[in-house]
Image (cartoon, rainbow, N blue to C red; front, side, top):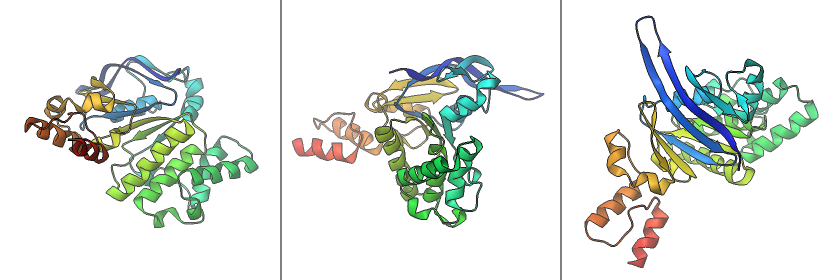
Length: 277
């Protein structure tokens, strides 16, 4: 598979008159088309700054970012980049611009100059893909947090991006809302082959990813499959991160003498392993 995202030796500094702070420090990473990559890290690790650089909201101080062959520093390619890599932010209210759900989802395609007939088709498909077509005539401010975030995601889907970047898109939701959104994210990746870059501080949301990247102080600290990364319990806790509860439980049981692997991630995996003992 080809890479849709290439981050090459990127640094980003926030500058003030008195000082500067390097939020990203010589970071390199690639994301393949159709891949689901989770990026985790504590507050201040640089993960949200990275997401804004990927969508050309910010520009690297050093290095370059290539999105589907286009350099984010090339102003003439800015529109192409933002069509290719859609962005879903933490607060859905910041992305909702219309007073009716259907109109809000249509906003992006309208700005792309797509003809009305195709817009109607795209809006219907987008709302169905996130499971809220029946809410198309509702006012967004009357919806739950999870429903609002699904409206925001539908608005991005209607623009037909190859990649969607979720910048802590579940941070303001309750557990039910987070589950709704994660179901949509997994469906888009597995069924629609949309590349997903999911930036989160909930470890359980990274379990289903193809690859997990752990950031600390603007650098890449760990990288690998969820099982490979979450085995590093001491390293993760040292930088203020938790691990999935089942992984921690498996490690504790192993220390007590049970013959059980220490890379268990989910309740289902734990049940299977315990039944085999």
